[in-house]
Length: 415
Image (tube, rainbow, N blue to C red; front, top):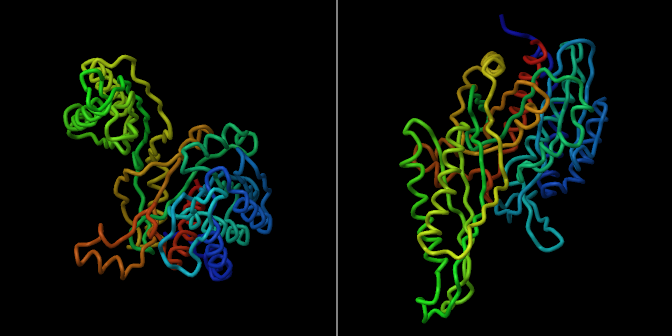
């Protein structure tokens, strides 16, 4: 028998839609970098207080937590991330960002975090207005610095566990480049773990006309890049998934000077710890071997940074939420393909000892997507997250994201 609570709560969706749309456009026009979300956090805190939440701000720096208590029952945590990216917006929207940092770096909400914030505020408002339809505690968590992989950890280290009650289940969503109005979920490994690595290899500098006097770190680095291409194809089992990308190679300053070092930056994506350690170990082994083969005068240096955990959705929680989505959205709900993007959301429920689930909502105009699909040009014509042209259509994206959070929260509160 269908659950009537979501429909009863969401009957008032029109009452929040007008301010949501204006709030979203304002957020989009005023993005802030990781750990600098002061304006955003202040706006979020004000809305939470207006909805009747207990509010704790500056958690882990710029994080905000709103707690809505409604009698006895389970506790559900809903999370939205708040930070933007150093991207020059090219959408041409009337509310496009024109923000720059003090040193001239352009800013843009190129990943849709402004959507996440706005939808969660709408969901909290609707649930606050319909307390007769549920009981328990709702925690609305607005996290800084997802893009630098340390915002969730900062909130945990900033005392999150002492601020919130015991959390029974945690949930989050992300707007993605598929048709707006759709909601997609997936049990098990959903978003990859990610590891970025900076490697410095050392040579011996010399005049470009005297290569015999040098240990050329450019050739050494090139050899490493080529050899790394065999890691996934020859050291990872065919049924497992891994991505290894060398995104940067920097060496030297002039055409006729052989430099004394080179710096490589690479990124690894995996879906289980065994594959993760296999790939990282292979990288170090290959780099050390190539340095020895080249006669490098110093040991290479390795620095891991921007490390994201695996997002591994709890099966039972995800099945319950997926069933609730199917009940409410019908054929607009469905399975989410495994994503090679990464998130730090899972650091929060892991620290709190709570099972979690994470789903996707579409943000692309359905007609635009359908036309690109029919022409076989989705990859070419549909901007993806982090693109200067990524601009989720305002509706039905905001409505769908708000509905999904309400439906999922009620499923979690019901147990």
